[in-house]
Length: 470
Image 1 (cartoon, rainbow, N blue to C red):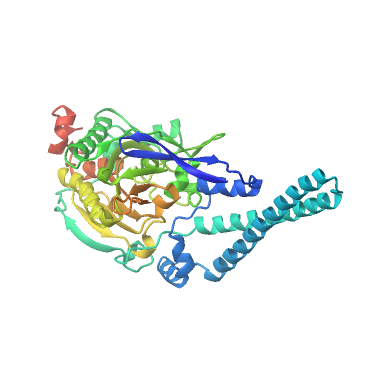
Image 2 (cartoon, helix red, strand yellow; image 1 turned 30 degrees about the horizontal axis):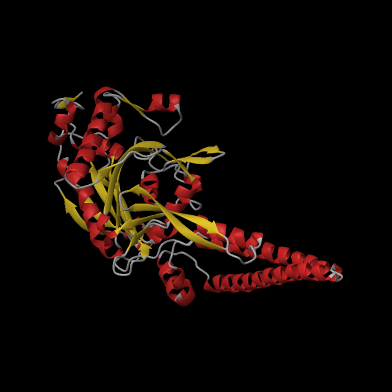
């Protein structure tokens, strides 16, 4: 049994690849072989790192994962892989032997010979084959569970370290404001101008908020400034995507299975989840797609709500809007050639910084250490904005380069004109910015002694010329 690609256009020069089965004159493969082919096509083997590393550089993989304090056991992997190969060979041999015996039955019948011994042999081979298929399925399940849990390898420029305390400050921008009064945090400021956490809890639960009047408009203005800047100045294509996604989409970008506890599941049949970030649906635009070289890079910007259960985060940032179950975000995503991803990472981070500069909000850029870098990322910059009410910098954007980690599971590829063959793209994304935290930063940095909020000049056209709230 063979499969051949059939392509149809998504956009000009961007193609979905749909596997189609065709039969030759050979005997049809057994159900187990068809199942293995189906799993391959569906991407159920969950490889997100280059499999060649596991075949030839296991010690290197272990060494790199140790930087993350991730315990990888190369002996266990090698044992599973060796057993998988043995059982797979045995399964194929049994399939071939059973097919030969089945053909022999037809020949014996045509000659009028006794076929009962052959029937018994086929039955025996069928029992052996079923047992081998069961063992192969069990080993493949263990292999999938192992591979799905392995994080991305880190870029060599990522510093060693175990927690956020070891992150490296790269730069700072802007002057921290000084006040001749004790600055309030956004909760105290918002209580008088339309920020209602009690109403959010009444309607839903804790960690939800209702914004009213000019404050709701201010958040909308921040979002519009971001979208306009990224589309008209930075060259991104605005896109609107579903806020519910299937398990394949979450698995493709690395949220499943590791982070299922952080997700809100909306239904079981079909399994649909509320998006934790627009990264998931936007990056999945290129799942199972081959992109022509001349169409790269692809740059998308998307505004969406985001939903996170914040599992394991109880007790952290419980006051105010810092850590909510629902929040707004403008996400920027780039799909690039491998040789361009390092430069694209810097560019994308500068694009997020541009919003902070337009709002005149002091911030710093942090390079995350090995122990604080996210599961799918090879390198991440965090942008942290100054919050006077807390007297500290807080994250407002994470800008990450995933290299081919997501693309391998997504089968997102580009056609290299030098070889004519499809190769994996590199994917990158970042918050450009988190709208709720941008709202907080504006409120706290632009407050006055009476608790009013001055509107930054960049936002006044979106606020109908309004200069002050409160």
